[in-house]
Image (cartoon, rainbow, N blue to C red; front, side, top):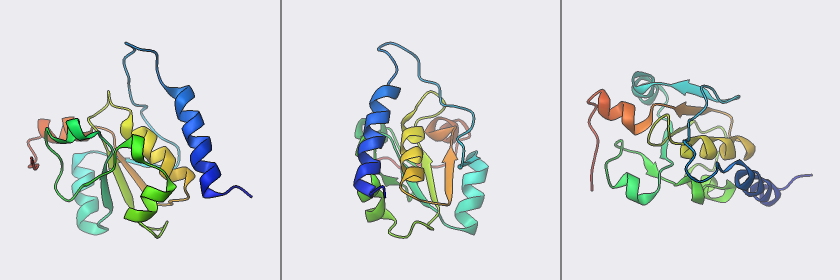
Length: 142
């Protein structure tokens, strides 16, 4: 039997192997198996229908540039089964992840961890904050 602690350790080990070489450009994949990809309008529609927990997977310095209202800050480097359980104790809770955009891999890492932790209704806003700003949707800034 694989425990959540073991999953977190396996995830961390896998993430270390997946880190691109210094100077390499990060490009998010087009799709993530087991995850529904949405655009900005899809995020808005989903928020109106099922009210997923919106998770900003960016680090603090990126979030200071602005963030989508009602999003929870949980950087990918702090994402594990325990931190997700704090935000969403029920694995049936819909979760939607975003980061800076297609050249940001943080939401990819975070949503894959959520998959491994057993969350079943996962959404990914690949365009991220970059698309949100380009489409002139409102956002908050501390």
